[in-house]
Structure formats: C-alpha cells, structure tokens
Length: 140
Length: 61
Image 1 (cartoon, each protein chain N blue to C red):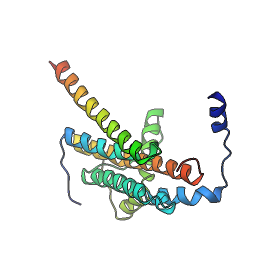
Image 2: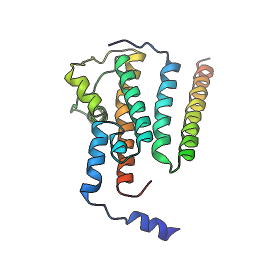
Image 3: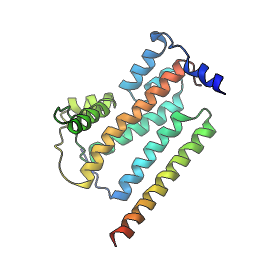
Image 4: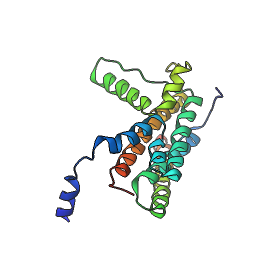
C-alpha cells in the first residue's frame, strides 16, 4: 500500500507537448481538453456546467474581480477572485471584450452572481486537471 | 442581458447542481461511479442546505 502510494507520487511529469495542448484548450474552452482527448460526453457535461454557472452569474449581475493590493485580505480576495474569473477562459474574455462591467452592489442576488462567476472558473480548473491526468495517461 | 432574480434556495440549488455535475465527472473512473458520486455530492449539498437553513431558523428564534 505504502509502496504503491510512493510509486504514484514519484510518477515523472510527461513531456509538455503531451498535456499542454489539452490543458490550454481546456482553459480556453471549458471541456475543450476532453474534446481534444476524445472524451466528448464528459467534455459536453463540463462545458454545459461551466457555461451554465457563468451565464447564471452574468444574469444575476455578478461583479468581476480586479486585482487590488492593500491589506492581506483585500489582496487575497481580489486577486484570488480575479484568477477565478480568468479561469473561465473564453467566457471571461468574451464578457470583458463585450463590455460587461457590473459594479459591486449590495444585494443577495448580485452576491450570488459574483460567486457563480468565480466558481465557474474554479470548476474549469478541476476540468483542466482532469484533462491533464487523461493526457498524461494517469486516468482513462 | 436578461436578468435572473432567484431566491437564496433557487440559487443554492442551481449552484449545487452545476458543482455536483463537475465533481462527478472529474473524480471517478467509470461512468457508473461518476453518476453515483455526482448524485452523492448533490445530496450532500441538499442536506447541508436544509440543515443550515433550519439551524438558522431555529437559532434566530
């Protein structure tokens, strides 16, 4: 058991060319890495979930984070939120390009919207990690 | 852009649904296990949602 775990931990990183295209496409188009690796059904579920989460966030009037410096909590929340937003890939790029700029206003629905936007990006990070594992041959 | 005006419950339910689908898809190795895990995560979200809701209701007095 311990030996098996040790072996798992020591797996060398496969060459960049093997996994980078799937991970990069997975960032740009949620589920895209899975499409590239011929896991169409799973890719479609990921695309629908991340797109659904992001679109609901937009329709709820969620705010996008901008990186800010200041005290540690401000930096952590705003920079972390910004990274989460950016991880949505094409959805983030399109919404910024089309001029989506919702100010951070008080209200439960707006607040949920902001969380939905960040979570869509974080779910896409999970999808990217999964695409990496498939591309690296660690998973079916 | 059409607006969505959801209640706390509806928003939390939608959040649970999307999150559990992704959790199910990325964690397990067979489709059956993925479906079961997704359903399990969704059920956990619902239990937490109702549990915390009642806790707040009772705590509020």
